[in-house]
Amino acid sequence: MHTRNPLAAIAALALLSTIPAQAAEGDGAAPLLAFQPIAPLDYDSFWSEPLSDAVPDIDGDGELSRDELMAFLHSTTVEVSVYKADSSRNALIPIFGVSERNTSYQVVVDYVTYRIDEADVDEGGTTASYYYRTGVGVRLRADIHTRKAGIDILNLFGITGAVSRGDATGTMRFEVMGVGGELINGLIPVPAEISEESMMAAMQAVAAIKSNLYDDGVWINPVVFQRAPAYSIRRVATPSEAVGTTSP
Ligand SMILES: [Ca+2]
Image (cartoon, rainbow, N blue to C red; front, top):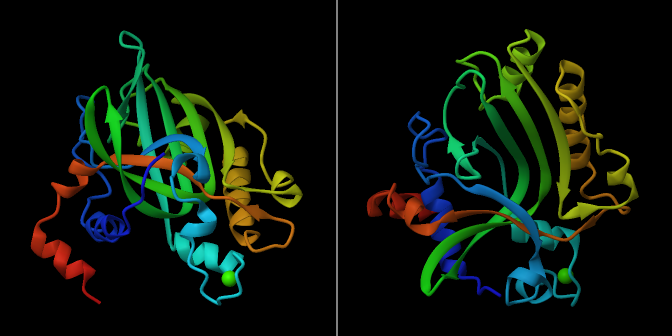
């Protein structure tokens, strides 16, 4: 269980605006600047304060409405993370550039409405501080194998183009996070080979799910789905930038 720190969340939001979308290129150590996807965790099983207590009851009717929940989440983004499989260490290494040839990559794209909170985590006796994104949305995951170097693997359309030219092969699958219901289930594409058609279908599904978030037949239950080491975010902003961006 983790305790949310609302002040830290506001500071994190301010600092995030100063982070470059793309860190330095290279296949070495992770720059640690970006949020990384994690397997989605139910809100109430992660945070010590239950969702029903955390969300402000804006209209005072004693109930948690969808508008109140979405106001609580409040931010929207698309986040792309790319990993290269390191078979020698059985690990995934974050990548921030173009591809090498004959290499396997995992590309994760999160289309999400979220909030950020800070939590301290015990890591084998030492305490580490992380920012967590909690919210709802859609996760698209592509597993690709390159035949050529120089493919823009941060860009889904770059990947699709490479596959259609025969420069890469791959499959993709779709996951909804913190949202469900019969209507949503009917919109989720099945796992497929990457192609222009399957990518178009995936983009249409993202748009359809976003536009149906307020439908009566759709339930929303936020999940914790990304995290970033807090120090990695703090070190890229100066105090003056932080103050400037938090001022109204
Ligand atoms: Ca209410």
